[in-house]
Length: 186
Ligand code: URA
Image 1 (spheres, rainbow, N blue to C red):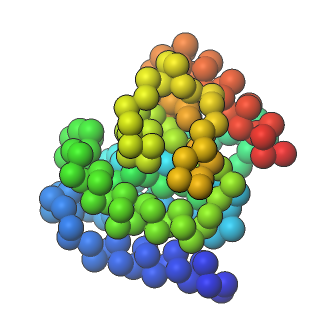
Image 2: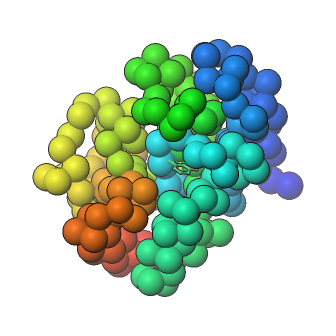
């Protein structure tokens, strides 16, 4: 196993024991994320949902299946990316993570994951991921489909698949965004 894969395993083990915020009290299992340590793309969602909480795996519920189809439509596969979320534990009732939960979890776990993988592109899916990693509340309607350089990283802004699942207009926009991402990575 190379040092980056070992590093990701060590982070996952540490996340397993994390009690830094209140979300740890409500979770069944934390969801650290999964994918190759040398992934060119890291895709970041908001938080695990019910199925992710039961299985410990990212994007395995309805939004994940929708995401898989969107990616496949552009010749991308989930197993060539590292998939994760801003917070690693499911918020009760799927509420949006609070600011302190986002800040704590991002600093403790997501940033170290990004430093280890050092991907070419970090895909921010939805408002929460944009807020957590770009530290500003950009309007998705104005900024989706765009690359943004910040802090030495390249980010790509798009919608969350759970929103795309519910609104055809968002699904169309997200499909176009993913096509742009695929064109960039080829
Ligand atoms: N939504 C997310 O943001 N992450 C998951 O793992 C599942 C749904």
